[in-house]
Image (tube, rainbow, N blue to C red; front, side, top):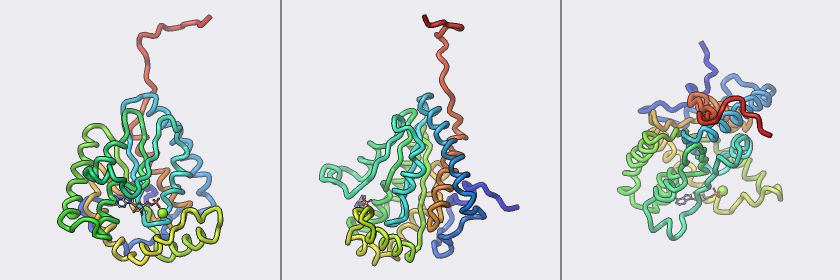
Length: 271
Ligand code: AMP
Ligand code: MG
């Protein structure tokens, strides 16, 4: 029977070798655009409710990692999905080219500093995965250095998980033609041109190298403690729905509850 459980449909099972040329980035798993708006609203309402409980409970921690090739929709996902969160209990961190002090530490230093504390949700716009993506593609460190990082990343994420952090990682997958259209649209629209840099075109010429690097990260770092979800993202409405639903289902499993203060008396009347 067909399932509409997006977590099981999109999760990369540990040990599977991901081949992105077998994935259709326009796939929508039977969902239709016309109905997607209402479904998304319902999931956003769940996210609002669950995040408030998580924040009030102040015990569990959640880390959401967003990765994707340029223009895959990391920013749009933050706006349209993470926008459901009360900013008091949620943080978005965008990881850029490392600064001087960041470069003088190991690559996980700045990452660890941005992981969530009790009750919080941290959203990463790019992450430590850049250290096996752009760093690998541009050979910013030798292969013998970056090739050890998959294991290091698994160990790091396992540590976070064992210490109480729930981790979800999303790879937003678009194809090369979709990226071309989105770049063109960014360039043509004066309100979007700020997102476009000529350097993006240089990265675009390395498309195949990025695909190979993403395939390795997805294949080697999707663990039970920190699964990757591979989200077909040519259709923005499906991407938003899939991420919202997967995060909401995961928060649901955490079952955060409003705390009860046992020292408060019953029936108190405030005068
Ligand atoms: P954007 O997300 O468009 O603002 O671009 C941020 C840029 O920073 C991207 O080109 C990333 O590849 C780059 N970046 C992020 N993390 C790293 C890293 N660890 N090493 C080198 N470049 C990075
Ligand atoms: Mg960019």
